[in-house]
Image (cartoon, rainbow, N blue to C red; front, side, top):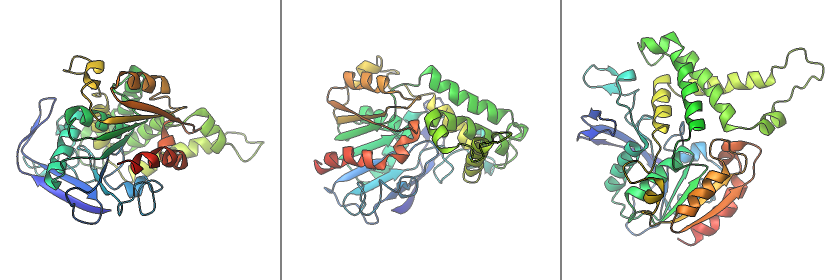
Length: 340
């Protein structure tokens, strides 16, 4: 897919009350200009993903995959707050000439969607034939289907929820506590701050993304006579370092905070009433072992949607199953794509 960026030279007002004089938005598309009338697939990415789904979802997006950029006009916009090019805490504050860091406005999922809508309008896309979002991308997809019901024709919500639950928020807060416990994060002297806290935060997150079955299947000790088990511990440190090498602590703090804003019913008379505004044909896909967004919650959401189906995939990997169970997802999504 091809990378693009646009600059919005108009004030952007955040739902929390902050204002920026403008935005830079990064997005990826199929490697050609959009032709009005062609089928559009819009992918909303997850927490630490980027606008190139071929990188983080290679078995689902690419030539010959279910989301083939040659067959459909595929778009993925980078979310506000991400360190991958779109405006966020890592961006330069025009007032100081330095990165925003902790001076960035608090952002919400609705802010992310409003920025994505600017990308849609820039591209001249009036109808999205299929919008899909896994995890935090599902937050965006739900919001978008409510905010622009005439634009989104079909929507797939994958391993996601209409509202941040206390359990979900507790994991997010534990990660922010790890960041804040790192004195270099609190100093906010540069983007190098908070690296130890970020590694710890990612280790906490991994426990919520996976399951005991997944860890027990992949992180068993090779030596039956081990003195101190360390394979799972080494895996946690490895995952922490991987994120530190590609992310910054300030973007991560703001993005986890934005997750706590997920509540499609805010200002709309409640979740059930908000869902009634959706006109898209919807598909909710849950993962049987997902502790963050369990199937029971997904089934309750489907019951409130005007035109929705429910499917479930099986995985020992919990929430991260949406990244791993490509065969099951393809079997569910290919017939849907054949209908657009």
